[in-house]
Length: 556
View 1 (tube, one colour):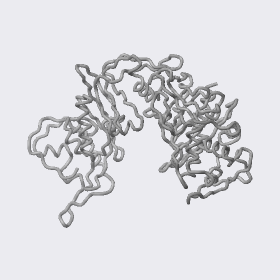
View 2 (cartoon, rainbow, N blue to C red; view 1 turned 30 degrees about the horizontal axis):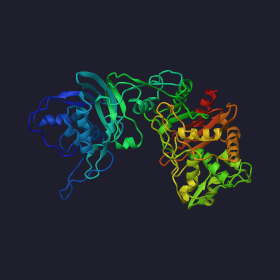
View 3 (tube, helix red, strand yellow; view 1 turned 90 degrees about the vertical axis):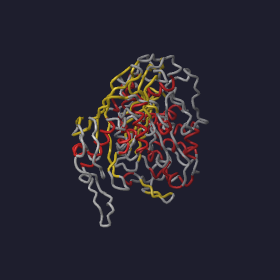
View 4 (cartoon, one colour; view 1 turned 180 degrees about the vertical axis):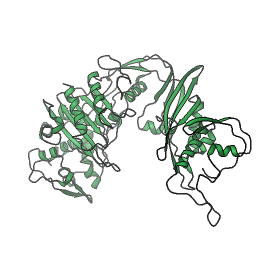
């Protein structure tokens, strides 16, 4: 821990974190400090003076002693209420000091006990217990956290890598913890049949309930209670994250908000995503845009509505509509699908470098041939795909009003290789399951209907609209492409047993730093449309496909 001075004055009893337990150590002069921290000043940091008398900067991996000592120093100081000392043990003392001060003054947490767990590399988990107190009302608080130790580049000193999540895992940098009378009354959210939607009943419903409260709490007729809440900062609000209740000290009186969620489909969606880590899915009614189900395997963030991920080849549904409209492709006409195609100095290829000789566009779509789409890039303007997504599919205009925070897709205007990549759902294109379920719904229904979770009749919201629709000929061919893919293409295995008027498209999106791509799947059957993603899952047909197909079957 760098050079330390011996403690010359006598201190009062103070708590310390030792060996995974909280201990009380009576620290006297001199030797007492060594007993608390585990050795002399130079004993555990490995720093030695160089030949010119200047200390050498220690580099390389952190030792177990450095990690545990740094974590112990930080946790001991935090538990003792010694905010300056705790902040000094981090690599961002100013931010740490502000949040740790607010932990006591704003969040009103007292009697804090911190118990570290077993170290894993540079990471140390710990359990937090305390009491939240506000105007005579108290309630116990307990949760688990973790910190990571890093080496400061300037001098090699090990410090806690500071982020707001060190204080509480639900915090993002810039957020605060506040206890008091909640500014927004609670809401009782109902499904379409009048049943209550709760976190206990539906594992991933939390972010939706938070969003409903933020949007409708004040107008739904409820009365606020006293709560410990996460108050989002600018960075989190920019990502449409809602404030979050962590602990309710006294109950408020909730107002009532009815949603469009179907209880049977929501239950089925929760079961499906529980089978696949990092999976998300959304289901909409084609004829109305009502959101019937939304679920996420990771319940802390609503990827189904707010995710921003490259959709891979599922984007070829939108691209195909563009190519057909412009006369650059036709379902049953021959279309090139070479092994490679170079555009904008990038060499694009198909999965496993396959090619289709003398094949039709329908064959290329069904097998998801990348070069069949990128080969048309030289004949397109840079903004053609952007306009198609916005004007026909209602994407990327940031004007959806579904009743809770959502990301409405992004198809930015790009050029050269990035434009070519956009045609196959890479480059700067970003979507989530709700966006892609809406794409399938637009194909099946013939026109864009903005998805919504709460009826616009509740608050007079204006739903987003598309400025134009596809021609009857384009629409007919697009349905033919998706139907053929569901019956005989890359979606066939997942869609086996999904009868009726059905269509589908698979997708795999490469992501830098991931060994496996994100697997996507979008499909429709009858009056239902659904889409899902499994991050780092691999091919969409075998990962997201079974999830989506199961929900189409469950919907009847």
